[in-house]
Image 1 (cartoon, rainbow, N blue to C red):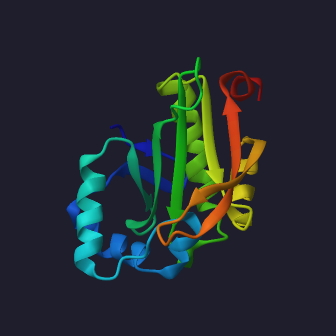
Image 2: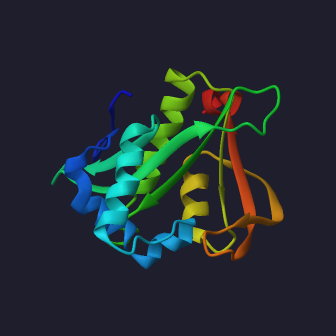
Image 3: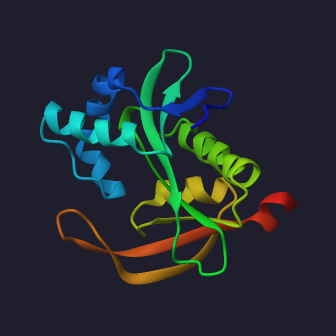
Length: 176
């Protein structure tokens, strides 16, 4: 997995040395907005971090000015697109860094990586109707609303939400 650079961020593979920043991210109940279960202890966070280290396509989002891991962005196969070579992204940002444009910067970088390096036909993402910040990030990054699936997402605590699907095609990416 190659490192990706933006003006303010470095997207890179997680390392075990990131445990404190990762635990800070994962133990915050605000991570529930993206569907993740908050870690109850450092050991839980460590186990999740180890799995992220072993999995290709999960990038730590590093703030260049201080070297802190402030979130992650994941790219993985979207197997629901039939004839298209498609990938899907999801992401989570430490609540202390919200509203600074960091996630839009990271998602925009991932969109470029998906089309220019991975040569995908379609990149998709889903969120919930309540997650207005995530919807805003996707729109600013060039994604277009596709549809809403009623009761399409079950969170770790079995609460059911609608799934709001966004995507960007290779054709639309290269038009801009």
